[in-house]
Image 1: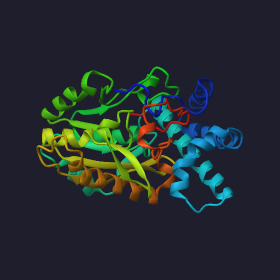
Image 2 (image 1 turned 90 degrees about the vertical axis):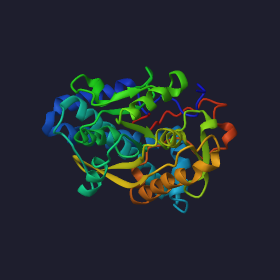
Image 3 (image 1 turned 135 degrees about the vertical axis):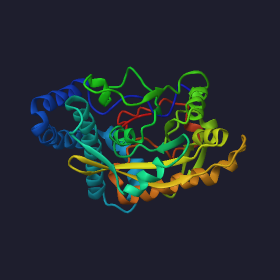
Length: 323
């Protein structure tokens, strides 16, 4: 793995700021934690949006493509709503970790979608994106009664905590570190062979452009990784695309756009991967049209390929759930 990846583990805000919000959550308890933290968040987000040019810079690539004809004022509005949405998601994640189960409900939009993946008679790959709150979505997967494994890059530089790092919640999944030998592929193939669930993010590369392809995304070329599709071909396991979004003050919904069956022996020829990556990208575009502020990739996915890996991206406004 190229360690000079295009994004890093810095976050918006300071470590102290995050801990102040954690204190508000503990102070507010189950009844007042969310209203108290959200109320303060509105002012904090405006402060960053109005006085930190770097935030505007980080938001620009996506917002200009999602809202290409927006005026300067509308761009400011979109920027505020987008960062506010990220802030609420991070607060929700902290509430889950500090106050425990029962504070939020994550469920599938349609019961039939849950029944569909529950009926799969083997292990499978869940291909997710940096949308909604994957950590709350994972709680819905617990009902599948099958071990869940998550490919996740962890860093000591992370400022905000995952819900299980608050010490009050048991982690309901096993973490596979992509920084290990062969990117964790041996371990990933092993869990699939045991008919377990493997969760991978399909919308972000880790600086290794050799395992990515340029795809049309919001009317421009962006890099998407294809390791998940190779794993599916080798293991002959289906890929289940899942997206999540915040649907109410204390609820999240999960959608299942489609299930992809990958043929065996795709080999190393990249062009054979294109139809399957395209299916994922199209599902992500459809999601973004309906939920424009729930997509949390705060870096330029559309930069020329040669710029990836050559400079460490100062992605200080990093999206929720970086895996």
